[in-house]
Image (tube, rainbow, N blue to C red; front, side, top):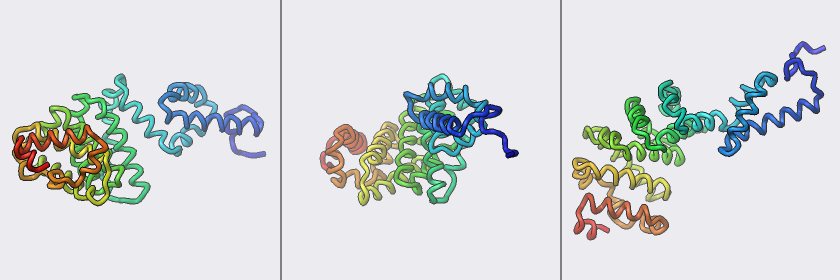
Amino acid sequence: MSDNPPLFGSQQASPHGREGQMASLEQLVLDLCDRDLRENALLELLKKRVIFQDLAPLLWHSCGTIAALLQCVASHPDTRILFLNAHMPLYLYPFLNATSKTKPFEYLRLTSLGVIGALVKVGDTEVIGFLLQTEIIPLCLRTMENGSALSKTVATFIVQNVLLDDIGLRYICATAERFFAVIQVLSTMIESLSEQPSMRLLKYIIRCCLRLSDNPRACEALQDHLPKLLTDRTFDRCLREDPLTCRWLQQLLLNVYGELGAQQLH
């Protein structure tokens, strides 16, 4: 007789029954990643947690499940501040700080960025204030320099949303060091996009620059430090497909160079 405990506690289910239960549980775990099915899946898994001893390993090792649950908590208005008060984002920062470019680390980096992205997406000033205190900007800038194309895009989205909040704009423009750290990384990314275009990333970069131009000191500095490829027709083909981003660029040039200068440049 086997010394191993039965998988479902004291139940003496047939192999076929256990296989059926396993398949059902695996489907519920998959449902956690579906926004429309998540609530029911959580309820059913809660009921089965006692009889299914291996639920925790299944949740942990299933692709994207933990990330989906964290993003769910981070984005919901009733749990977002509780998530911050528990300092949960700090547990993700080591993954953003990692320098390895191997796929496992890149996956962890992207998953962590997704949770932070869910936090900033709602435009909550309290959230932005918390993240600024925990040095999220340097971590995002590092990813924007060294991450994969997708990680760079999510990190730039986070910086964009930080800038869109007034306290985020003030923070980044408070010192020349912070401003130039941001604009230098944005300029480097623009250079890369001239070789490997990405409309989504270009959109976030232009929106970041446009928001920086709302600060008088930053706008003046942009006269000499705005990425040169934004002042010529390098990205005209991409911009034709996105009228909104095209208008953002036109407004950026207008803010920085004035009406006459913007007409001469573009």
